[in-house]
Image 1 (spheres, rainbow, N blue to C red):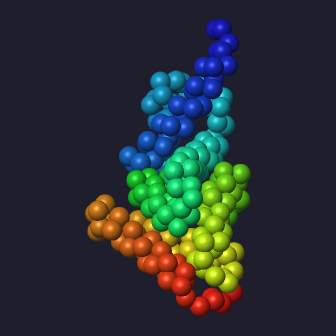
Image 2: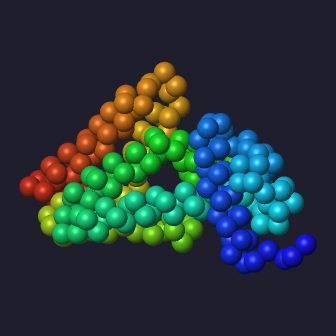
Length: 209
């Protein structure tokens, strides 16, 4: 049998990641057999093993792709909202929430990966994760330059902001009795409350650090 061309090898890996993300969404858990992925992309299991030696390797690649997709969404909003950091914090947070609600299993893989994957528990430790968080920090710093969050320690405030949004998303995803519109409404309100707090600091007194 002729050796596959490099383009074909790359296509198998790319399609495997895309199909695994689709299967994660359909199944609602991380228990996606490699044989199911191979069947979905139309290749043999040995061919898939040539790119991912086990399911953990594939899930690590899928997790990284999740961060890539989130970064692209956040970066697009960042570019659209240049000159309006307050607006970016709001719309960027909405995008974060939408991403989580539309990709709940992928989101859990990204932010609460199983120990067997052997990845850091810190979602911002990867290169792409760091880029996402840096966009957020830039929004906070630029907002502070415009008079918001005066005197506040942004390293501490950034953790409070993200943990509030992440917590709201995580709790909402766990509630199976809520439909999608209700989940969006609940998490959007959490973001809106945070933005109201930031807005109130513009004409307020110096915050504590």
